[in-house]
Image (cartoon, rainbow, N blue to C red; front, side):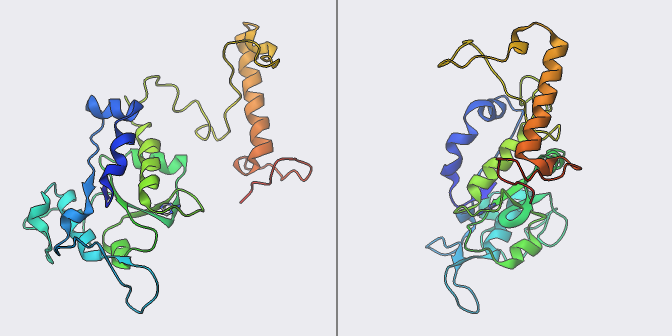
Length: 256
Ligand code: ADE
């Protein structure tokens, strides 16, 4: 991963299941500071846009030098400021390169099927852009994919990269302890998840559906399937291929 805020990831990558998977070697997540590939004394990663206008644009030469070093497992000193690919580089900008995801609001929306596709890759390089803009040549020569976490704008790609990391890595065998849980849930089945309850049996006068304490496993499974279907029909009819929109529903219409 490449970012101008490497410290941003200190917490998320060392917490909970991600922290455990990194510690036990199931995952190898490396965070690189894009500024390590700058050449000027201010360590600038951006400049004013050609053609004028407000805001700054992230420089393609810095992104290219950084990615070529990271792809080829070279230290930053080897390529700082280089206009040509590093000697003996296997992966080069504009040529053969590992799957490289630029986080940007104009990208393909992150969904469970996209996460499953990315989880097949032996290695991913995530590029955290800043929202104001990234030189188009980074899109063309460096990224193999552009991914958005939704139709809204955050300050930069860091929060989006964290979403990609969590979504993808929990599909990697060995990261989630209970092997059944990543597939037995919302979006993998194509439906929202059924309601869950645990002790105590009464909370502020609200009880638990009787079927769940009946001990009848078949009835529990049928109830859960029905609840998942009904919740999806009411909240996310767009997830049900042949479901007409319900004009009488109180829930907000969701079909995109
Ligand atoms: N950067 C800013 N907004 C973003 C979004 N929605 N997805 C990915 N990267 C972003």
